[in-house]
Length: 233
Image 1 (cartoon, rainbow, N blue to C red):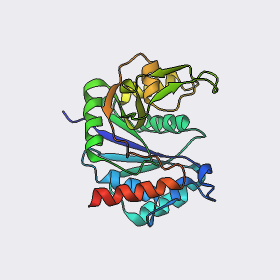
Image 2: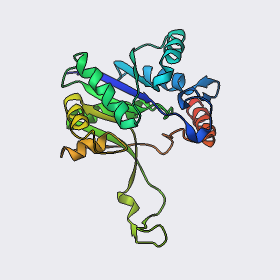
Image 3: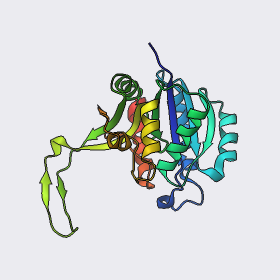
Image 4: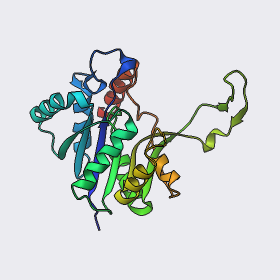
């Protein structure tokens, strides 16, 4: 049975590290604002049924106008983001609850500033969440990894074959992520899957790719453009 496949795309960042005079979602990515690049790519993914856009709160009208002009399919609503990624995520989940999303719907949460969308990873993530209740995409780490407790001396080296860098998408049965986000809303975390681990539930690993980059600093735009060239070739 196919449960509803929902995608929550988070675009709440202000983009301070870009030193841009506007929120990061409007940064130009090879001729288009990043928000359009990411949402167009997500809308082409066959596994996704509905997309909810979470925008930086003062930009909702601008986002609405952009999306109206672009006519991107599957977008159901534009929601205001919170002060943190975690509060933006919870706010979107609260909205889904109010609008009657069923407990067995599968909700994927993605960072809007990861525009290198891979349809096979999206499909595998939904499958893993259907089977396990929760799934996180993470890429194997290729560098040697060490721990330093004081930032001055090496405490220990870690076996990199067991280490993965967390990415999005992160995908969940709605009842599980809603309960986790509500219960641990006062505990500061940097991603959604860690809330499910706090709940004591298993989280499946979906192996991602190193080029699922996050646009954080201006140099990342060049990395996106080279990825786009490679994948279109």
